[in-house]
Structures are given as C-alpha cells and as structure tokens.
Amino acid sequence: MAKRAPVTKKARKKVIQVREHLLTVPTSKKNPTGKTIRDSHPRRLVGTYLDLNEINAVFKKYDRKKIIYPTPKKLKSEYPNSDQFDDLIAVWTDYFNKKMNTQFPIDPDVIKALIASESSFDPDPLGNRKIARGLTQITKATFKILQDPSGEAKDFIFKGIRQKDLADPNISIPMAIRWLHRKRETAASKLKRSPSHEEIILDYKGLLKSQSVYKNNAITKYRDMYAKLKK
Image 1 (cartoon, helix red, strand yellow):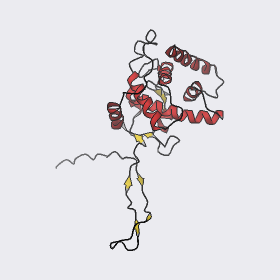
Image 2: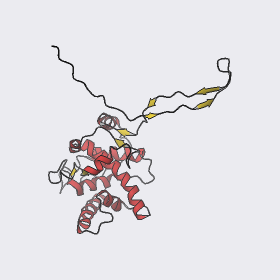
Image 3: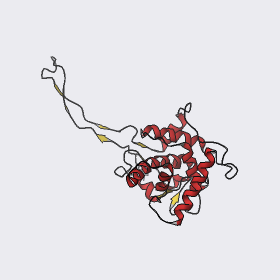
C-alpha cells in the first residue's frame, strides 16, 4: 500500500481584509454612472511583524552607512565578548527607532548596558531558563505578548518564533529592542511624564514601581555599565 505524503502546514502571514468601498470616478462610455467599487482581497500589512526569514533578510541587507554603533572596548576588561553583538545592536536599534517613528530614539549604548546587566553577554544563561531566555532575558510572559496579534504590542509583533530561538542573539536582540519601545510607553503612563532611560530599563525588568532591594541591585549594574560606555 502506497504511503501518503506527510501533510505540511503553510506558514500564515498576518492579513487584513480590505472591505469594499464605493468610489466616484470620471464618467465614461464604459462607466456612465461614475461609480465603482474598490476590489476586496486579503492583504498583508507590510511591516506589522517579523518572522525568522525576515529577521535574517533585514539584518543581512540593512544599510549600515549612517547608523550609530554602541561604544566599543569599554567593557572588554570585564566581558571579553562584549563587542561581539555591536552590529546586531546597531542595526536593530536603528531599525526600530525608524519603524516605531519615535521622537525619542533609543541609544544603542542603552541596549548594550541592558545586555550586560541581564546576561553579562552570555547568549543563553543557564540559571533563569524557567523564567527568561537569551542574551536579553526575555520572560515567557513578554515572549507571548510579542507574538500576540491582539495584545498590547500588536502594532508590531513577531511571528513563528519558538522560545528556544531566544538563545540566538539574532532573535533576542530585536525582540528586546521592540519591547523597550513598548516599555517607554508603559513607563510614561505609570509616571505621567517622559521616562528616563533608567526608568525604561526598570520597567523592562518589571521593577519600575517595586520597592525591593533587588530593584537597586538591578539598576546599579545597568547604571555602572552605561556610565562606562559613556566615559
């Protein structure tokens, strides 16, 4: 008996149904009424999400001529591989600063200091894997939100990313930067004013309104790393 070929599922793109609209156009022999209906078909909204293929394509083709890189060499005495991710940081910081059309662009050194404080530049630390994964220590809750088309980050999400993919800095860095843009919004809402970069980082860590000792420890390491980058 012949074996059936395995059924494969096609990856689905985010689509929006364009509804029909009555339009007024110049009258003609073919259209004496001057009325027509715009055609209706499913179309993807370009730029609403990134999947694995698009992440790789964007990074590979990105124009690096005028982008700002994080400061090199300042953290190498403590973290020998601290400059290893500078290209990823520069590309994805620039990408999301433009994509999110923000008036307050994120500084690439903020991302580098965040990574130092979260993982000490270890692409996938062992200690916290039940809670968070990757270079930027994205939690399970955050990971879910970043792929939820109806969630709080729905204006720009990721698709088809598995949690184990966060061990790859090519994935964890763009996801973290996108999340920082969201954390700027949530921090501003909580504080009723524009947040500082430290306050955005605290909200990323879930500690903006916390009174715990851990809050001081977490921001102290970030603050020290950022200061060294700016010397």
